[in-house]
Image 1 (cartoon, rainbow, N blue to C red):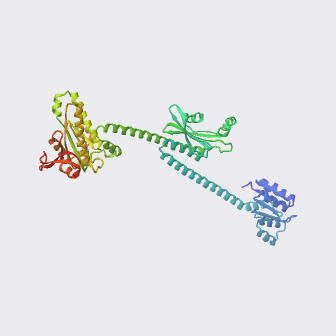
Image 2 (spheres, helix red, strand yellow; image 1 turned 90 degrees about the vertical axis):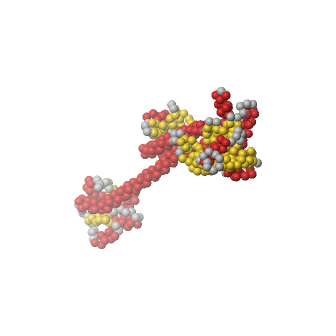
Image 3 (cartoon, helix red, strand yellow; image 1 turned 135 degrees about the vertical axis):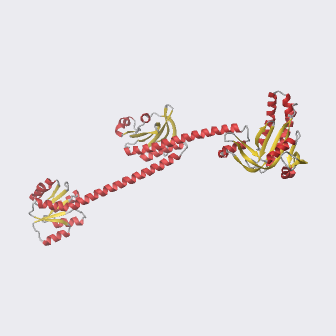
Length: 528
């Protein structure tokens, strides 16, 4: 291994020239020379040679003095001593002072070269070790730096992809771009129709990125979007622009944001100050990775927003359709818990009302069909408004009859009171309507019961009805069938639950279809 720097310290010019011309230069060493020990020490301090060839006897400062000075100043330079006096005492002394080898004058080039190679072996090994250690340390630093960057990029990507608010998302992406590339400013642009619109920006003096809405004039971003390839400009390429406009960037990098093969926008960073760093290929790789994260996140946010809009439209459509047939409480329940819209039901206590229009059949035979439908709709509208006003569930219309129940789907502790109040209000409203019309005097016969029933969705997966089923429902219908026009028949359990709150007349036991045992029935007159 040639190229080492060797300092020859000898007061003999002939000896110095011999060593330099016949040993050092022919073998590729870099020679330095000093005429005495003082000059030798000055060169040793200044040039840090790899090896010193030192004469023992010199003026001003001899070889022993140089060795002592080297040790005192901690200059770790290997030394080969040259002398005509090769006594054992001198050898022991100089070796104690750090001499690596000892050459007696006169010597041959081969002898000196062998001594030089032997003394440089340790130097070469140490240099190789230092170089290897340096490379290892640099590799470790590079590895730690890459791991830190990847962790940062992963954290940023995770944070970015979790955002669904478009405004927050775009600003977060721009801030992340300036962080991973150590850029002074950044921007994000989206393809919107025929335009490229800047949607978020962070200027050099901004603490955070902010949303904007500006049609872009950025030719580099337009080019990145058009070609689908990243672009970068160095200070040399931007020098002419920088001369015209001091606020122009000194370094620019732009990457396209792609979803599959479709470019949805561009993400760019810039450095403005002349002393700012130039973006490297590694910066480009980090920005491209972030651009991929951003593209996915933006697409997710768009899809989520569209899904929310579709869901809201569907909810409005469901509400608009369902509220024509069922109580608002049922609609709210469906919208809150769509999973409950499956077949099946559960047992619970309810109060049931059946109301049938009396005199309808005779009226329908005599009146025009259009008039029959108009009048029927008026009576049903009254019933619907009254039931919904008390948060009842309108089950169905059965010809000229109405079925409703209370305490489902929502709990209503006062459901017996609500059903009685609804029946009385219905009869009162019908009487008022009849007086206003002056003819076609129809009225309701109403039956009311309270008890357990199975409440839920009945039918098929494609066509179902939210209803109540059970003996309690059947009994209410039977009471309605036995009621006189304008009469409200109430089963005993309802009267017992309400007590003094109601005004009712006990009719007594009544045998109804489908029951072996008679039921005790009351005629309802009012509420206390």
